[in-house]
Image 1 (cartoon, rainbow, N blue to C red):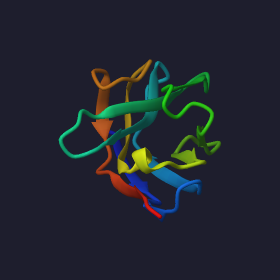
Image 2 (cartoon, rainbow, N blue to C red; image 1 turned 30 degrees about the vertical axis):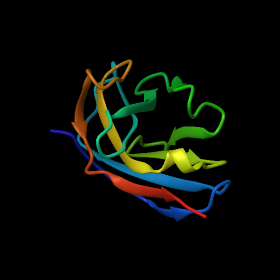
Image 3 (cartoon, rainbow, N blue to C red; image 1 turned 90 degrees about the vertical axis):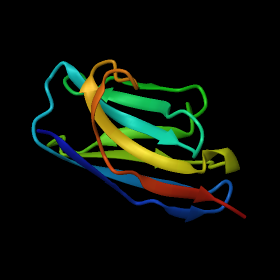
Image 4 (cartoon, helix red, strand yellow; image 1 turned 120 degrees about the vertical axis):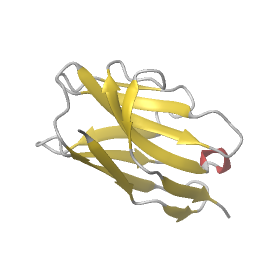
Amino acid sequence: QVQLAESGGGMVQPGGSLRLSCEISGRILSSWATGWFRQVPGKEREWLGYIRQHSGVTAYADSVKGRFTISRNNAKTTMFLEMNQLKFEDTALYYCAAGIGPLSISTARYWGQGTQVTVSS
C-alpha cells in the first residue's frame, strides 16, 4: 500500500513561485513513476509531469514546461513540484500520484488528497 500526502499549497501572486511537497510512504516499484496532476472544478484532471522511479527521467506537460520542475530527495520519500512564473490559469487543486510509468491519469494507482494553489493579484 502506497500513501501520498501533498502540502505547500496557498495563495501566490501572478509571476510568483511556490513549492509543493509530496510525502510518499510505502514502496514504489522501480518500473513505476510518481508525478503531479491538477484539477479545476468541472474540468478533467490534468497531467503535469512525472519522474521515473529508477532513472529519475522527467517529463512535463506543455502548459508548465519551463516553469515547473519535479524533483525528489535522495531517499525518494519526498517529491517536490517547484512552480515559477505562476499564472492565473495555474489555479487548481494539485495532486501527487504514483503508478505505472510513464505516469498518466489512466496509469496512476495511488493519489494524494490534494493541496490548493490559488494565483491571485
